[in-house]
Amino acid sequence: MSSNVKQSPNGNNNSQELPSLAAPLNDQQLSQLQQASTNLSSNQLAWVSGYFWGLSQAGAPSALTPVASAVNTAAAAVPAGKLTIIFASQTGNAKGVAEELKEEASALGIDVELFDASDYKGKNLAKETHVIVVASTNGEGEAPDNAIELHEFLQSKKAPKLPNLKYGVIGLGDSSYEFFCQTGKDFDEYLGKLGATSFIDRIDCDVDYDAPAGEWRVKALEVIKEDLASQPADVVTLPVATAAATVNYTKKNPYTATLLTSQKITGRDSGKDVRHIEIDLEGSGITYKPGDALGVWFENSSELVDALLAQVGLSGIESVDVDGESLSLRSALIKHYEITAANPQQVAQYAEISGSKKLEKLAADKDKLREYASNTQVIDVFKEKKAKLEAEQLLGLLRRLTPRLYSIASSQEEVDEEVHLTVGLVEYQAGEESRFGGASYFLSRGLEEGGEVKVFVEHNNNFKLPENGDTPVIMVGPGTGIAPFRSFIQERDNQGDSGKTGCSLATARSLKISYIKWNGKSI
Ligand SMILES: Cc1cc2nc3c(=O)[nH]c(=O)nc-3n(C[C@H](O)[C@H](O)[C@H](O)COP(=O)(O)O)c2cc1C
Image 1 (cartoon, helix red, strand yellow):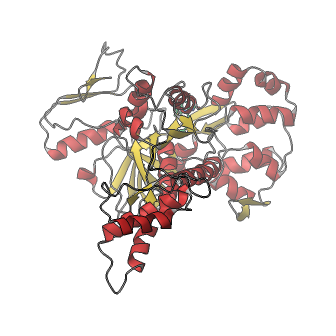
Image 2 (cartoon, rainbow, N blue to C red):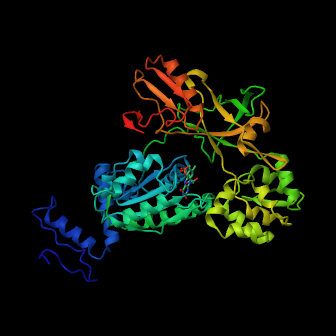
Image 3 (spheres, rainbow, N blue to C red):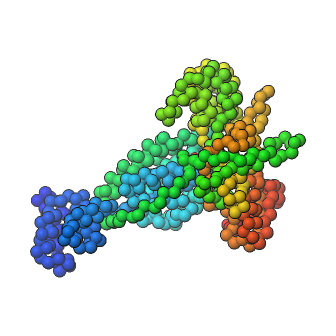
C-alpha cells in the first residue's frame, strides 16, 4: 500500500492524505477536506464527489445563495454509467416494449438511450455499463431484419470481450412456433459468452406479452437504479427545457380514425374480394413513408361471437372483468379477445376440457398440433366436441386480441392526410359454413363507411425506396401483394423521380431472378 494512504478509524481506506503538491489546494484546505471525509463510506464519498463537481459546474456560489444552488445541482447529479436499450423488432412489438422501458427508465432518473438494432454498432458494447436487449423472433427462429447484422456480429470473431457489461434480455415470441423466443435466447447466449454478466434472468414472453414484460421491466430498472447509484458520480444532468408535447400514436395509444371508403376492386365474377380502403387521418399529425405499415385494431364480427357463445352454452350477458373494466362477455369477445386464429396451447387445453379423442391425439404430437391450430379457427376447435364452459373458463382459453399490420398502399405526397390499404378478405369454407379473417372481415364488411377504426403507423426502415430517385427499381411481390408497391409508385410519381420503376407480382423464382440488389445490398 502506498505511503499516502492512511487507515481510517473505521478501517475504511477512504481517508487519503492528499499530496499537497499535486492538489490545487493549500495545506489548510487539504487538511479540512481530509477531516471532513474521514468517516465517509464509499457510497457517501461518491455522492460528495458529485456534489463538488456540481458546485464547480454551477460556478462560484453567490453570496445570496451560497449552498442551495450547489445542493440543487448536486442533487441532480446522476452516477456514471447508463442504460442502453437495443430493440430487434420486425413488426413493432419489441420496439414498443423498448420504448416503454425507455420512458420508465427516464422517469426514474436513469440516463438512458434507445437504439434500433440496425443503428447500433456492436463494437460499442464494450463501452457500455448496462444494456437491455428487447428482441422478437422472426421466420423460423431467426432474428428480425433490423437485427440480422448485430446478431451475426456477436457470433463473429470481431465481437469484443465484455467483462464490464451487465445485461438483461426480453424475448418476444409466439409459443406456437418451434423456436420460441429464439432470438432473445441467442442474444442472451452471445452476450454471456463474451463475458458480460446477466443482472436479471431473461424473460421469454408469449403473444400476451404486455403484463409479463411490464413486471420484468420494473424489476430490471430497480436493479439498474441501485447499481448505478453505487457507482462514482461523474455526470451532472443540467435542467433541460422539456419539449412541447406531441401526440405519438402507438399500438397502445392508437388514433381513432374514420373509414372513408371500402371499395371492392375485384370483378363481379371474381372469387376474391379485394378492397381499396381509404382511412381519414385529418388532424392527427400522423405521418408515414411508403414501405411503412398501418396497425389496425379490429372488432370481431358479432355473428361469430354469437355462434361461439352458443357453441359453449353461454348467453353473452355474463359480466366479466377486462383490465379492471366490467363488461358483458359478448362485448369482451367483440373487442378484446382473439376468436378467429386458434393456437396450440388452446387446442391442448380444450382437448382436456372436452375429452375429444381427436384433439387429445393431436395434442400428443407437437408438429401435427401446430399445423392443425394454424389451419383451424377457434369455433371449429370447439366444434370437434361440444363442451359447456363457464365465462371465465372460455376467456382463459382465448388470447387477447392483437392488431393486424397492413402494408400502406399510399404516399402522403399524393393523399396528404389519408392512408390507403389494399385488403384481401380472408375467406374459406369449413364444412357448410364460411369462415373469415378477423381484421380483413372488419375492414371489408364489418365496418361501414364513416365508422371508426383505431390505427397506428409502424415504421419500417428496412423497406424503403432508394434515396436516389434516378435509381431504377424492380419490385417483386412474392405473395405480399401490390399494396406497398402502389405507395412506392405514387411517391416516385409525385417526386418526379426519373428512375424506371417496374412492378411484378410474380415470384422471383418464376421470373428466373435469383439475385436482386436493393439499396446496394443483395436481397
Ligand atoms: C413470420 C413470423 C415468424 C415468426 N417466427 C417466430 C419464431 O420462430 N419463434 C417465435 O417465438 N415467434 C415467432 N414469431 C412471433 C413474433 O416473434 C411475435 O409475434 C412478436 O411479438 C413480434 O414482435 P415484433 O413486432 O417486435 O417483431 C413470428 C411471427 C411472424 C409474423
